[in-house]
Length: 145
Image (cartoon, rainbow, N blue to C red; front, side, top):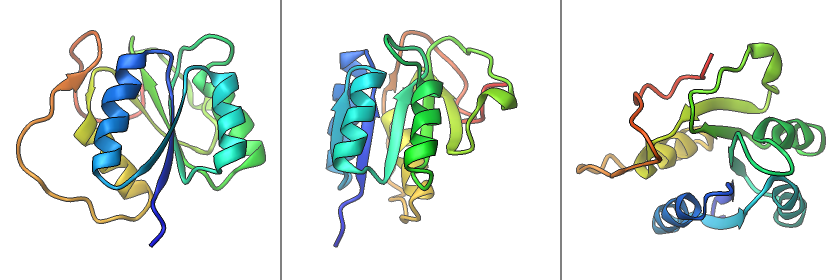
């Protein structure tokens, strides 16, 4: 059985660590990068099934990463994460970006989103997962607009 391959791109190491641990526990093969340039290099090498990237990063933003991935791997869905409720117009968002989720978020929420994107039946486990990120935000999971 093919392990679902996810690429996490974020310049905040603690977010990468928490998400990677949870995704590995849920059966994902996890690859990471600390900025957009390294993220694109890693994507070319590992050919992920899905990409989760921070919006605001050094070297390349999450939108720029998604734009370049749309050109080279248009079938790979992207989830954008943002810490500040950053406002994006639809014209800014490449077609491969499925959602822009605010930080903080729960790792369980990200797993559920990825499972849904990849057509995997998410485990309806109970219990709460601590939210990740610097400030509280709603859990509606809608694009920031």
